[in-house]
Length: 409
Image 1 (cartoon, one colour):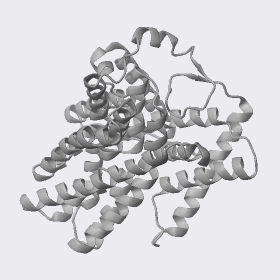
Image 2 (cartoon, one colour):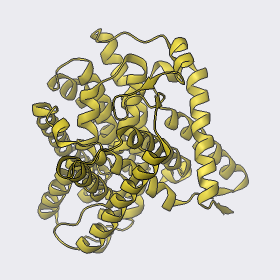
Image 3 (cartoon, helix red, strand yellow):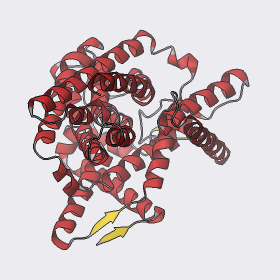
Image 4 (spheres, one colour):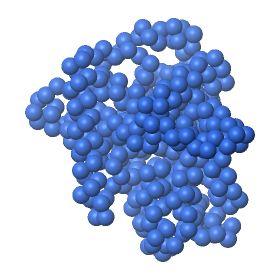
């Protein structure tokens, strides 16, 4: 029997998952020590509980996808609204270098998937599904390309396989990023761990006046009713722009996922208002809504996780996906960290790369927040990863997938 949660019940459940995650991270030193994000900790426990209920009594829960999608779009819009062109110059050459690091890993990911699929005697396109389509691309890309692979390339069940693989990647991306960064930081003595008990006591007292997007999700931001209302209007404009552009570009050369248009709309709106019309943007309000949306999106994504469906990832596909996880860890350790400077910022970037290299940009940001909450801020990482992971990566990934399909098709 299946119970469908409407938007209200879904939101209540997501808040409970977040509170559970915060409780677990505060109480269990293992989770804290290895920097597991609170939404991931709470979400996995909820997923295991729903799996037990399903296996014993046959009950399952379906959450409201519209609300989850809305929070995801608000998160990406907040990235765009934070992207002042003058601040983006601070990324400089590091942003370009990181893009090359990402692009090469996408090629590695697809090479592993296609090669292992061929060796295991299955269609190479299934290897592509277990490559950058679902892992770097996430659920949105998995759904879009799954339909194309089913209709144009006759890959039966491509969408189902893609969604299961993307879910696997989302979970693993949230698990491996924190421990990898912690290992790098401790091995190379890059930063000292903050006093957790003291930080926990001061969480609700710390006030952030300057704009540092996503770096201190627990800190207090001083906002007003007027700034909150104005900011909600900006988010609504970004989402309306995303919906409009998604509809008019559907089926064309310029077709992009809706969240990319939400981010792009935020970039345009921010810079037109601030640099041309000279209208002040309330960064602290954007930060509050962005962080809240990020946490709620991740909680809902993991709350909707049906672990029993991952039994579809049997045999060959499981081998490919586990190999991809190992490849991601090794690449982030030996390539991402070293090329990006072998410093503290590079370790946070490595955690972020694990997040969107296997899962999604929200996972990447959650990974980095778990690290910076423990070791201190990394403005460079929080400037580079959201833009690269949410915008440039999808463009690069789409180009690589289309090129590969021309050869395999």
